[in-house]
Image 1 (cartoon, rainbow, N blue to C red):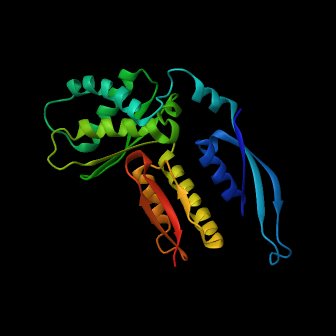
Image 2 (cartoon, rainbow, N blue to C red; image 1 turned 180 degrees about the vertical axis):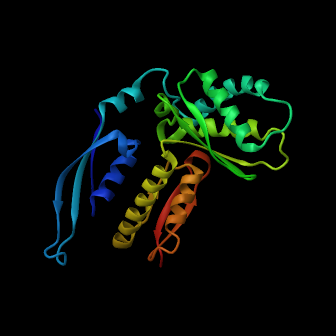
Length: 245
């Protein structure tokens, strides 16, 4: 089983750093505290927490099982798009409200993919629909860093908006993944901002999706002593946390 050791000022900070390295969520790992030291009376010295985070056996098995998880956003989108072609033909000709239409599209895609999951309409407004996935195979529909979930979201939005002059937003979520991911990225941003202030050296965060970079940018708005910017193009684009001089 994969495991890494990471350090931080708090258990939460150390675990967040380990999760980022492993590319999994907190419910897929077991955490062991290896060291927890505190400065004398909280004044002298530094708080140091060191943890070992290990991916659970069942989570590792799901990740390695052949044919159960697309390896990238592109592959997830291809698989969803193939099912989506048939989903389009099954939809009524008249334009429907975004929420019910998106739900019907996604449910049809799931059925054509042969997965045991249901698409539940969580909320619907004229501008946005939020759909929650549930069922026995829901973990497989998240994918590494949400890749499969993003592929399903893109395919669903594309079809649901096919007759709309103004494109409306569709959000597809499962097991509160997007909220958990945002919390982890926010913790990561705060932890790195603290390191940047102390070391006066930049921290570089590569391999983030555009919306994940926005989460970190927003998390550090108003954060004293640091600023953020992005550099690079395409897949090489990275976010930099820099000391604010």
